[in-house]
Amino acid sequence: MFRERRPMYNILIVKRPIVSQNRSLNYLPLRVFSLLLSLSTNFPASAILISSAGPEKIKPYLRRSKGLPLHPNFSLSGEVPEVPVVSTKSGLLFERRLIETHISDYGKCPVTGEPLTIDDIVPIKTGKVIKPKLLHTASIPGLLGTFQNEWDGLMLSNFALEQQLHTARQELSHALYQHDSACRVIARLKKERDEARQLLAEVERHIPAAPEAVTANAPLSNGKRAAGDEETGPDAKKLCPGISADIITELTDCNAALSQKRKKRQIPETLASIDALGRFTQLSSHPLHKTKPGICSMDILYSKDVIATGGVDATAVIFDRPSGQILSTLTGHSKKVTSVKFVGDSDLVLTASADKTVRVWRDSGDGQYACGHTLNDHSEEVRAVTVHATNKYFVSASLDSTWCFYDLSSGLCLAKGYSGATRRGRTLILSDAGFSAYAYITVADDSEKVDYTAAAFHPDGLILGTGTSQSVVKIWDVKSQANVARFDGHTGEVTSISFSENGYFLATAAEDGVKLWDLRKLRNFRSFSSADANSVEFDPSGSYLGIAASDIRLYQTASVKAEWNLIKTLPDLSGTGKATCVKFGPDAQYVAVGSMDRNLRIFGLPGDEKANADDDSAQDS
Image (cartoon, rainbow, N blue to C red):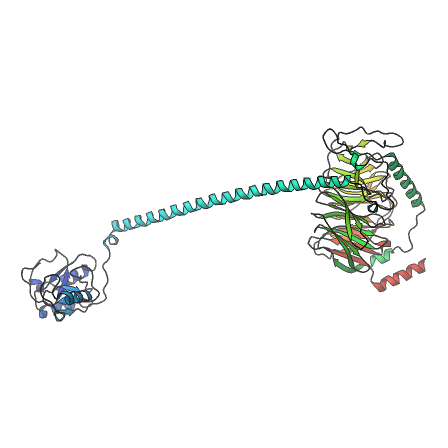
């Protein structure tokens, strides 16, 4: 750079070509010198110019520029040294660590080649070294370029995320497809399982029943065809054997006997008085079932004071009220038990379920009940079962728009009633004596299609009442299987029906409350406003009526024209606001209530009050 080199002790960083190779640098004004120092912080590639002036000439400038940034560059690499030193022979600036290593290895200056020792280098004191800014961040085009690079990087990252999202969506779609396929396979397997169960049940019904499985008062020979001789119609569906003339005669004789006895009936002296019912309070609560909601249906075996309940947990529980103990739990249904009935005073129990089956249970002798028959004649949920007064036959009602008339001993469906359609089969032969013993029938209702939700036999046994989900109540003649009456007027599904003991009245419950019907004139003569009524029940003497809804109401029965007085309103203590069933105990000494909190509650008189009431009744008699 210079034609002549001298030992120098001071350096200055300036920009080429602002300062040329001029030895009169010591005459440079201070403001220019300061400007050059400040410019050296903003621009790279500065040149090192060695001042030819002596130390006494440059010191004033260095003193005046104290605090100004000084950024010397290393002579070899052009980088700002961390620990700068200057050679006293060449005036060049070096990084101390690097020049000391070079001198120890070669003993000469790396630039000029002159001999150089450690004593020939002098440290330079500088302020905090700040590296100069890069060129592309010091101008608008540079900043735009930086932003463009950042934007490109962001777009690449976004593209990668979109690819990952697309892959995740494909994997999710594949998983959902596999799940849907698995669900279809499971549904198909369940259908095949149900069909296999139905076929197995058909085979079981074809096997003759063992003698010990038959009730004492229900012989096998009732004039009907054997289960193995069942025939099918043109549509390959099973035809039900008709109700024989012998069965019709048996039903008619039962009706005559019960009607004659009813004319001489008297109210039992042990029947609870109206005053006693008015003082009923909760005596006990029993959690019989495992799940909430709990109890769907209930029945009482009056001769033994035993209560049977059907629950949402697919079980039926046999409960001994006096001891407060569970006698047996009937398991076998796969869905909730919608209806449960005792068969007279025997040890037989009927259960209907939402799994489309009806089961017949018998006490095996050790307090445990075994399933004797599983009946699969319905294709939808079975809502109700009701037992005929002979205790040899029963009817089931289902949401598949059919009801079935069964022989209890064999479990054979003798007649099947359809609504809204006529089923093909053999001709129904009518005569004054009844049906032919070999007639095959399918009962048909020519009115609109309805789904049966409730059923009950008249006390005399020749009339069957059914409730429907279409708010209609239908009355059937059991002998002819004909629909002889129809009651309209309810709103919503008919949930329960009950005939009075005198045979004159029918009570029906639905969403809009309870209605009373006169069976002699076939008209509604009274209504009770109990929203969402779930159960209605006459007591065995026909003196009281119970309604289960959001509370439990007990009424005194009367005639068509007389007022039916409200005796007592019992609160629903379940906290669910929904009592599902109500039953009067023997002689109306207590009221049993089932609710959706799985508890069976007993309402009655406390011990001391009951003793006083019994004394008063004895004195009155």
